[in-house]
Image (cartoon, rainbow, N blue to C red; front, side, top):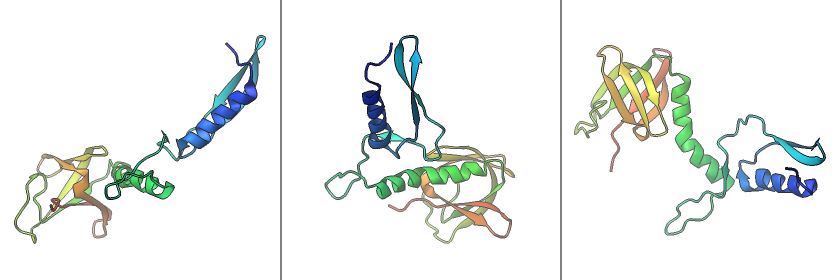
Length: 169
C-alpha cells in the first residue's frame, strides 16, 4: 500500500505526535521507496517522559472541569506514579514501616493518636493503588492503600521508610 502525498502524511504524523499527545512524542520519519510505491516510515524511540496521552486531561475546579495546564497535568501524573515508582525502586530492600496512630494492616481507625508501631518489611507488590508488604519477623502479609502511605527515609537504619496513617475523614 503506499501513500500518494508523503508531505501531507508527514504533517499529519507531526500534528498527532507533537500536537495531540502530551507530553509530545519525539519521532523520526523517513520516506522510503518500496517497489514503485512511497511509504512513510516512523521510528519512535523509548521515552523517559512516559506515559503519553492523546487528548486533554481535565481537572475539577469547583463545579467546572477545565482542561489541565501542562503543570497541572504533570502534577496529576506524579501524584500517583511517583510514590509507587519510589517504592518499587527499593523493592528488594528492607523497609522500616511505621504505623502512626494506626495499627498497620488493620484497615480500621485507631482512637489513640499517639500509638506508634514499627515493623521491618519487604515489598511484595506495589501498584498505583496499593502496596503489599511482608513483615519479616511475623511472616504476615499486609496490604495498605497507597494513599495512606508517605515515603521517607529511616536515617537511623539507613534504609527507606514508609509512614502509614489511617485517613482522616
